[in-house]
Length: 285
Image (cartoon, rainbow, N blue to C red; front, side, top):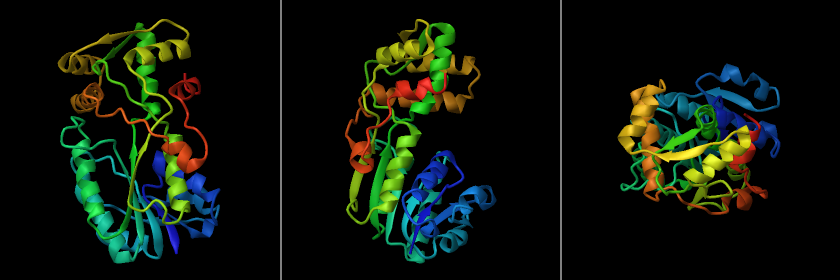
């Protein structure tokens, strides 16, 4: 029986696969992508690359065949991905997969104003009602997404935000991949559990401004905006309206206290502490 990673050609999927191949017999690893040819380097390490498309249910049944543990990495088609995830969950059942983990989002409740909460809430409901052994990996906002934010703040000297006094524990993609790989390599001890995957510190806007200043070597102050002004500023900086709205929704979720989870999941599952935002920035700025 195999350990199956979907989205294996994406950032999170590829890194998860790389870490998993260091932990288990490579011949037990199946990597699923719409473009399996781009996984040739991982196939050379002994993994099997298979074609699977979340919009093509038959391809998923074939891709998941012989799988025991399956990692479903959420797609990026906001507003459209619930049917895609439903296809993956149904294919897992049809293929005889025993256990599924899904990369979700913190606190995807109806009260959470984040634009991604509804998709994750619906997918979680589908998975937990599927009859499969399930685990939810609720990844916090990525530290890597702070890099362009920090660059803009350093260029202007001001970190414009709409998160108010809220705080969040941003997590590196590396740590999310390490947790996912640890789940794949484990047994059933994580069945029926929900994990918030976060960084090592809760940071507010002033904390981020200080972190950006330290990383870039120039002063940065935090300036609070309302949602409309924040969106207008993002659009003025060249972002499409839908992206600006998405970012504003994250700020609103932080402001409302919906993204302030702060457990010790990374160290619990991987045996090492998570990377702080400052370390992620130091390697990029």
